[in-house]
Amino acid sequence: MAVLDSGGVAVPTENGVADLDRLHRRKSRSDSSNGLLSDTSPSDDVGAAAAEDARDRVDSAVEEEAQGTANLAGGDTETRESGGRGGNGDVRFTYRPSVPAHRRTRESPLSSDAIFKQSHAGLFNLCVVVLVAVNSRLIIENLMKYGWLIRTDFWFSSTSLRDWPLFMCCLSLSIFPLAAFTVEKMVLQKFISEPVAIILHVIITLTEVLYPVYVTLRCDSAFLSGVTLMLLTCIVWLKLVSYAHTSYDIRTLANSADKVDPEISYYVSLKSLAYFMVAPTLCYQPSYPRSPCIRKGWVARQFAKLVIFTGLMGFIIEQYINPIVRNSKHPLKGDLLYAIERVLKLSVPNLYVWLCMFYCFFHLWLNILAELLCFGDREFYKDWWNAKSVGDYWRMWNMPVHKWMVRHVYFPCLRIKIPKVPAIIIAFLVSAVFHELCIAVPCRLFNLWAFMGIMFQVPLVFITNFLQERFGSMVGNMIFWFSFCIFGQPMCVLLYYHDLMNRKGSMS
Image (cartoon, rainbow, N blue to C red; front, side):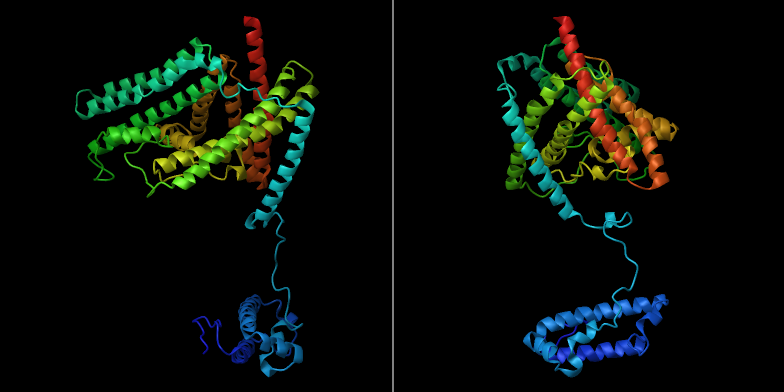
């Protein structure tokens, strides 16, 4: 029994010898029709592109069929190859020396034109193995030289009980979404006008930011507690702005005479607002794509990874970063070479901590939260590590914030006729203010290092975009890695640490 599919490819048969005979006859007909196996040398057809393509297609198909049929023929094929028997069914006919081995131009896998078209999984595994080996040796060497530097009060101590006002402030932040919901409900029922609703939303959002800042500055709290409160404050503020802005837009579309979608209707739902406030997104909409179920085993595995990588971050901070920072001078008040050496020495452990932070928060925690809430859209980041410019990085590494900026800052600026470049600067300005709040308020320092660091990204965006357009290579990616992870973050860490130590020294 012999079966051939519609494309003429041989599939398993009971008689391998008959298949080989038919294969040879089919190849002979194809070759004679295309002139590929004539008495002339194969090099005569090199200049003809059409004949070359035809030869590639015929030879590739014949090679695949011959190989598959030879495997099916089993011992009979091997006997014919070794003894020369089998007549026209000889598989060696496919691999004659006269058949060209080089038929078209190809690039090496690591050439600049083909490197991004290849899979580099093996090289990635090699890098992981080398990193594990090298850093394991460094960890053992560090432990043998300095001992165990992690303090027992790293996670919790008796002084942490002084931070209870910050904990109560975190709980009280739920008042502000309820206030925003009340405003929207009053607008729906025509109790207040549109301008009054806008003013109330502005008051609510401003109070939501200023209240935690006041509590943090008044209480002598730990840095970690203050950062946690300010991060939560910024998240709630972004969600409140999105809720007010989106509700206003839906209300405007629902009341307009020329609706884009006639099915748009404005309604206020406390359930949808509550889901939005805990969902892993900053952009409000009445409904979201949902996943069908909760994978409990998957959640347990991700949570275990979260614990492991959080512990790894704590180990690197206590065992490496803190000693380096404590034993360094102020980078702007000492020798230039010494400052460069300190920054470079701090850059590697700081980069490891930053990568662990990204993996823990954006991949593990947000996916765990999305799984528990059946939140379907889990594009929390893109392949920012391949960013060819600083602008690409900011568009890909933090998708919740990027979508919020595009939706509620960038395009609204364009709609009111603000040019593109000022709109980009405004978006970075908003980001810089909140970066400064998250660091300066817990440290009680307002030297604007974080603010200037974010605003410095604006010229880098245009510089790397120019280099990318001019040279078309990964120069922008290299500048991003150097300026952001090798130079920028370690420098900010040193600056804030020494300013904090100087402030404590002057207070004492």
